[in-house]
Image 1 (cartoon, one colour):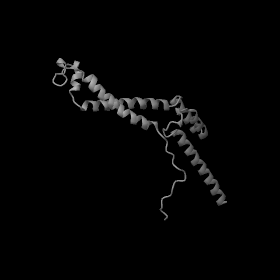
Image 2: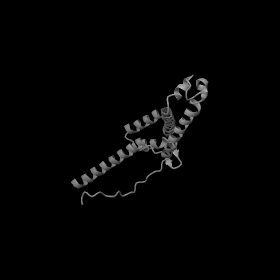
Image 3: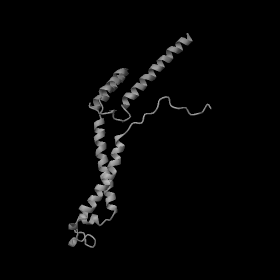
Image 4: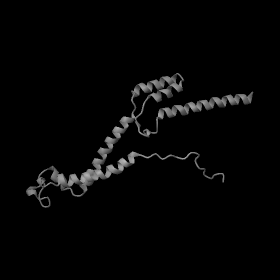
Length: 171
């Protein structure tokens, strides 16, 4: 049983996400809006000769789109979904970008790392504020730069500890 899978020591926390609720509500709403636009705006009798939607000829662009058939609301709903999700992503990513100047942040990190001061670089990451929701930081894989720096710092400390232990064993 040497290869038996082991249970994780800490339970994995599943975080509830409002983005799932947003997507669940947005898609049907966009479909309903597209159907309403198709029926009441594009299918208006004013877009046909003699006001006959069934047998009349389309007099303008809206009437021609309506003559496209039942596939038109589906295509319109796809377009609406893309527009809504693009706006949502733009807003969320804009809020998560932080409050400071990114170029200045990168220069400060580089100068701290060049000087060999990883702790100052980590402190600089803490200064770069991120958008916070009611339940804490937004879930963007946290602060990647800080994570890399702390991992690097941990490895350096382990390496130095290994070297000290090795010296003690050899002497």
